Every structure is written in structure tokens, then in C-alpha cells.
Length: 367
Ligand code: PMP
Image 1: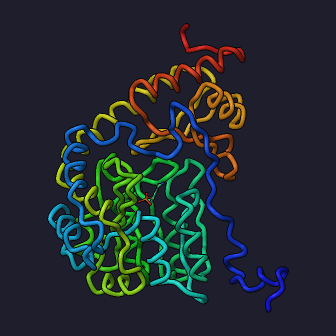
Image 2 (image 1 turned 120 degrees about the vertical axis):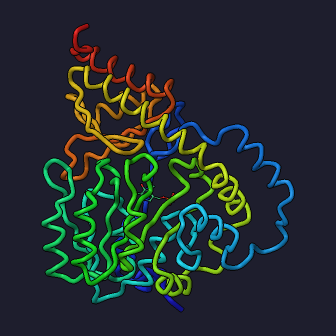
Image 3 (image 1 turned 90 degrees about the vertical axis):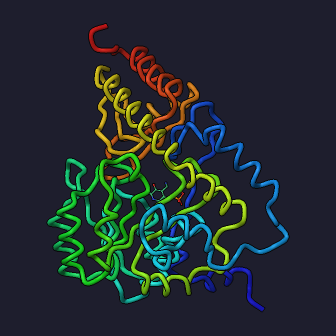
């Protein structure tokens, strides 16, 4: 029998080295820490979904291969359904992809700061991860990425565009150069594409090594349903399917995604409202002494204040506003990230910031 103290030696060393994902729980009225769509599903869409859920045959397994949703996504994206996979959030697809393409002895390239799941899942699969820092202006360092690719011939290069948490997109020419240079695939995470002014969708036709990853969690307002999808070359998709569990989505999430997809025009309209609200809020905060904000092509942005990240986080939390403190990252000194909420939530956030700075000696410019 294994002694209790030997239990941990049974765990793969690479797993023991990882730090589990953790997010402190705060029950606050203004939750702006996870880049969600604060508006939620519009009422008619919610009503249609409720109607559908009433008749779900929950005693039956979902149809293997999720053909209904993949066909609907094929229609929505103009990409063949054989090249489309759905998963339990793009988080799950990133895990599945890493276990399809990476193993000990292989390398992945990931920018930093970016979404932590790329490096996490690549390491879990046993690969070496080369993190390429963004420039001092928090843009993609394209020459450094190309040089890392040329030196290390990675099997996977991760690019997030627009990037979480910097909000900046990669340029089309730069992306094409990366796609031409790398001997591996480029996993392009477009979780926030609806808020940006271009998508790399059309590059799929000419670049078989491009994998496009998307999610229903942001503009489509379904973070709680856990639905993501990827578009890739059908021959690659057929291999990824072998690694994925047979039923990555349940009947609830398939139904929710199907209904939302039918009403995607409503979500696009919401995304436009969120972008307009983001720009209004950025404009307002630029007039506040002691606050620095960073431009973004997403539904969130980086900011910092002269009081530093910790004091700012705590002061906002005390006023019921939850943001994300990212200051532990060496390239994000004293920085925090805030999602764009509803108009009312954004005003509570802005007012809380102004009050906090006022009680510490600054005010809105011109006041
Ligand atoms: N990619 C990026 C860039 C993200 O920011 C997030 C969510 N924070 C995800 C993927 C995960 O999406 P999902 O909810 O589909 O797992």
C-alpha cells in the first residue's frame, strides 16, 4: 500500500509544478473582473431559450459530434463543418489542442502578458514554453516572435488578438508573416473579435496552419454556458477530435449556443454599444488627474492610478466594484484591468475612482 506521504510522488512532476487557477470570490454589485458581457442575453432571446429548455430530452445523450451546432457555426462562419469543433469553453479546446500537438521535446511560443491558459496547457502537455514579452508599449514584438520561431521551430505559436489583457490586436501583415515563417501551427485566439475592427477569418482559406479559436463567453453573453469553438483545416480537426472527450457540451449548452447563434445580430449590436460605452468611459477617465488608461480594441482596458494597484483595488472593492489586479506581472507595473459594464456600472466605477483619488488629494481635471 502507498504511504500517505508518498502520494504526491505519484503525481506527474509537471503537474506538481503548476499553480492551479484560482480567483478570489467577491460578491459585489459591480463585477468587472472577468471581461463578461454585462448586459446578458436580451429578453426575447432568453424567452426563446427557456421555451427550448422545456422540451430538452435530458434522459438522452447529446448527439455525438455535436452536428447541429457545428452546422450552425459553419453557416455563420462560412467554414466547412468538418473543420469546426466545439468545446466546453475555449479553455477546454486549448487543453485538447495542447494534448493533440504538444509533448515533451516539443516547443510552444506564447506572448506575455497574455491569456495564461496557453502556457499552462502547453506545459501540462510536457512541452517547453518560450514566452516572448510584448514591447514596452505592450504591443506584439513581431521581430522577437519571428526570431523565436526561427530559432526554436515551435509546434504551436499562440497569438491572442485582440490580446487579453493589453487590448491590442496584431496587424494582418505581421500575422501573415508569422504564418509563413513558422513550421508549426498558429493558434489565434479571437475571444474578443466582435469588439475589434477585423478578424483573421479570411486568412484561413490561404493558411492551413492557422487555427482560429473563439468563444460564446464574451460578446455572445454565454460565459456561464461554457461554449467555445475552433476553425481549422479539416484534416487537423479530425485528429483533435480523437483527443476530445465524446460529449464536450451538454444539451443545455448546445441549446443555449444554438439559440444565441441564431440571434447573433443582436449580440453584434450589443458589442457596438459596449465599444461606444468603452470609448466614452476612456474619454471620461482621461480627464481624471492621477489615472492613466490604455487604449483597447476589446470590452476591457488596462488602467493604473497614482495610488498603486493594491490600494486602488481595495478602495474600489470597498465601494462594491470588482476589477482585476494584474500588477504581479513584470510588464504590468501597478496595472489593473476593468471590463466595460453597463452605463450605470461604469459610472459607479468612475465615481469610485474619482472619490478615491479626491480623498487622497486629486480631482477631475478642471474641477
Ligand atoms: N481566451 C481569452 C483570451 C480569454 O480572455 C478567455 C476568458 N477569459 C478565454 C479564452 C476563455 O474563454 P471560455 O470562456 O470560452 O473558456
